[in-house]
Length: 69
Image (cartoon, rainbow, N blue to C red; front, top):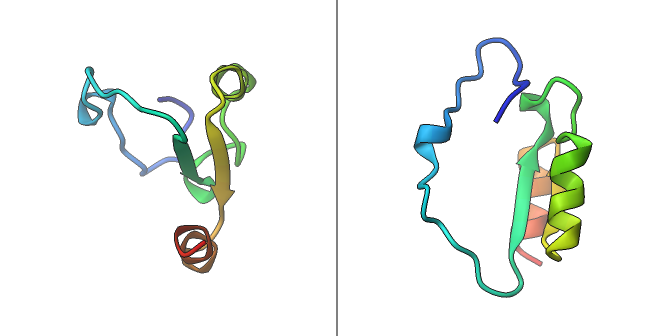
């Protein structure tokens, strides 16, 4: 993971290397932590290729709406 705003510290070490997803996998990205507010195009293309639903949220309210739907 790269291109986070200064002060945001996330390491690939925090993500288990053997994590696997089954069907209907969804990723929720908190945009304010990202410099460009979106993931790199390559990451988006990878998710699209494997039918991963990608949601960008900008606030706790947006996150709550997605989680409750």
